[in-house]
Length: 325
Image (tube, rainbow, N blue to C red):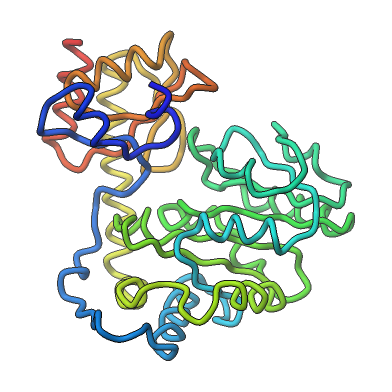
């Protein structure tokens, strides 16, 4: 089980272990609603990515984020941005737990904290995810602004991993990014648009930080396909607005199914739910035997994270598996 507890998306391993063909992969927090424009965007695979196209991507992303493009650096996935931050800031780290395992890997020194207040008053880099993974916790922007001000007074930085913020834009502190502020945000493209394989993300922060990050990433930070898909998707405002509503409806449907079987859904992020049971690995195994892949946690064996089903058929499969396991 250790591999399944490390991260989601190990569908091949699940098939090899449990058998079955028609699997439902709910082991990640990736949206099951895929941006449809990917089928109509043409990509020239023969040429190197064009710098003008990259600039257009950053303009489109910045327009969606509500910031100046000069504050945006394109990355091959937001995890790369997290690892860059550890090099850009010569500070010990504090990372708010529970959260991604990656958060504890990016700093040369530091330790986890269970409450962000414990990092205030120190010259440290405080890293957190908002909305958080795996518990779906959401911290109010007003609270994050208080933490930012306290960290700035002490010479520290606030780093917010907003990988899921496109599904909940009201929780973002993007409007606070500006020169002179000690705030860095990371954004993911693949989670909300359902295209994790594109490997596209962004670091958003003061221009001095962004310029250093761009130099570290080089002239071709992402593929031509990532540029083409991201540029068009971030311009598709109607689809994004409609998708947020659809995600909320599907999350509410999953909550009802879980409640029917005595499981209380935790978290506000509509792309996944966390449940706490007597034995999370036993529930993982029960669902896996019904060809449904979820995400257990080695450091908290009572937890199981369940991603959002793609449709009513998938939701019915979960219902049957929970009822007849």
